[in-house]
Amino acid sequence: MILVTGATGNNGVEIVKRLAARNIPVRAMVRNRDYPKDTAIPHVEVVEGDFDRPETLLGVLAGIEQAFLLTNSSERAEAQQIAFIDVAKQSGVKQIVKLSQFAADANSPVRFLRYHAAVEAALRSSGITYTILRPNLFMQGLLNFRSTIATQNAFYAAAGEAKVSVVDVRDIADVAVAALTESGHEGKIYDLTGPQALTHAEMAESLSVAIGRRITFVNIPPETMRETLLGIGFPVWQTEGLLEDYAHYRRGEAMTIASGVQDAIGKKSRSFEDFSRDYATMFQ
Ligand SMILES: NC(=O)c1ccc[n+]([C@@H]2O[C@H](COP(=O)([O-])OP(=O)(O)OC[C@H]3O[C@@H](n4cnc5c(N)ncnc54)[C@H](OP(=O)(O)O)[C@@H]3O)[C@@H](O)[C@H]2O)c1
Image (cartoon, rainbow, N blue to C red; front, side):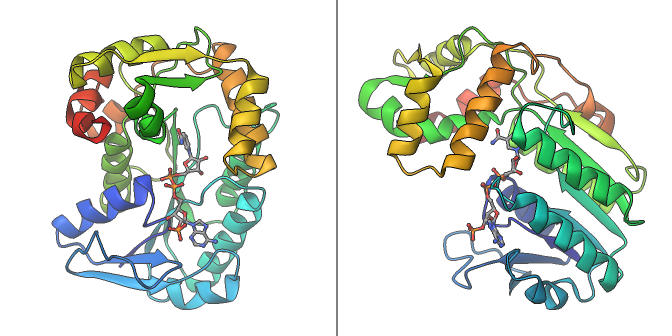
């Protein structure tokens, strides 16, 4: 039995869908039992578990051989994920596939990259077989800008002219499923990127072609981005983390094109044009 955590999120939904489509027994960990109201999938066992209550994880992990580990990024993420690894070890889990981030590094000025590096280190020293996925910025992140794209034909970020080798979440899910179901991925670290490094202005052009109207990327100063994120209710830790992420993009540290998708599943990664075409209706 395979456990998918973060099952209601961007990656988790895609991974559960793929496993279920192949009739592979899958358990989806959720905080809210109402799942999967709008994503009802037959043959998926839905269990309630909360990373903030490690006592709930023993039941969630009972009988699990492989687990996909993902939390959202918060100041609790490192502790949540390390506690999960500890309980997985007690429960006899054989393999963990961890979703990390491109350029994870204990000495990074970016807090997200530091916490992912700390969890990677804990996983490597746990004795559990591991596969680490390090995706770059998600193409699907653009969906977060749907409202300004719909109302102003524009989206705003402190990205400058940064080129980023953005990756499609569907490729991450394909790699995760391969790692969870096939041998040969043990002990591997996969850097997952798309086939091109693009500026946000180039992404706007591609999106414009796909949806048939002009969409503009507007560069904003980091201070404006901070005020905007805090204004819409982002917690301070996440806001500062995102600003660090965007500074990292502007320094050109996320523009490398990596071969992780090809290495893991023998296929080319999806392009931004593929993403724009396939998600065009979601921006209307
Ligand atoms: N965004 C990017 O461009 C990017 C790039 C590289 C790496 N990453 C990494 O990707 C990860 C986020 O992935 P994602 O976008 O697929 O996730 P997401 O859509 O943000 O979803 C987060 C998931 O975690 C669950 N969750 C949160 N707190 C929980 C708790 N206390 N107990 C149990 N479940 C909990 C959420 O469940 P609920 O539905 O109950 O909230 C949800 O299913 C982060 O680690 C981030 O660093 C992101």
